[in-house]
Image 1 (cartoon, rainbow, N blue to C red):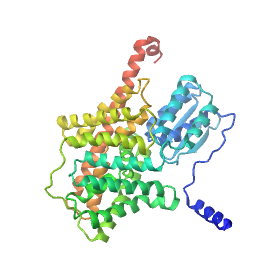
Image 2 (cartoon, rainbow, N blue to C red):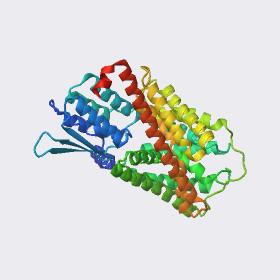
Image 3 (cartoon, rainbow, N blue to C red):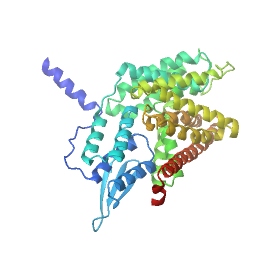
Image 4 (spheres, one colour):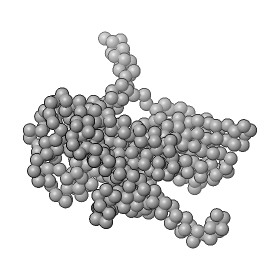
Length: 438
């Protein structure tokens, strides 16, 4: 019997998703290798390639290696050493899974220390390797609870009917369990978006729709919040706006493909159930208070689901409130289609400003959460799902979604530029020698 148990454990271990390997860092690490360790970690922290490239190039200059040239794509980092003849190029893959909020925050802290203290490259590389292996603070139960709160909060932001709330709770818990279990099995993790969308749609069409008077896709979308590629699409738009054509185009294709997989799962679920897409009725929505309550739940859900650092909950809530308030202001000034531009242009500088306070977490944590609230990933998913089901008006929804993405991207570029220029002016005011150096 013990031999049989060992065989079963060995067979099951083959199916699990491989964990990051604990590769020892050599005692002597060049600046090139340090950049090759930082770059993929920043990309896994959902930073745009142009921002990562700028950070790595500044690090190379600060470490006295102005002869290094850095090129960043979504899946790899290239560092060219022009001190050799001919020049030599080192390639570092960036194919790791996205980092949790606590890991992204630690990566940003290491980068800041490298700028400030000129840490040894071996120390920086070792810290990055350590961060990748850090286990989440919360176990599976709290992770599923976090996904449930995310689902309910995201659903409240859509201002649903009262009968939709218990559906969000049940679906959020079910999808959270699927994500926790499925992500540990390598084969299932590849099909997880399609399988989850299919299962959730089938469940709603067969069991929930007779009891809940709301649109089916508005019920499905919040439960799939962890799969929606809204952040990916927005970063793609930022990269295209910044002239990063290859990076932006490849990321855009990936985001659209992810939406297509989710839409196919919904279409398959509707086909099996034999039901039409929309069942919306005249039931009253919850009202203007619902999105604000949703923001509170979303902040707590992010804190648990993505294992945010300690004492960061209030700062995540701050970022979400600022982003949503700025978007409401944009809606009043320029209309809903361009509200994301105003929202991002205000939210990004406000978050960078808060990041200067000693008690605040790294800005990467607040920015990631704010982007999730700004991006219209749910609308893109609904539009593509409606198009797959032949629903009228789907094309307009898709076009509005991509228009909103471009508006948000422009607002993010404006907000980041304002923050960068303001910082440079303040530093030059405090130290006039810096302005003469430029």
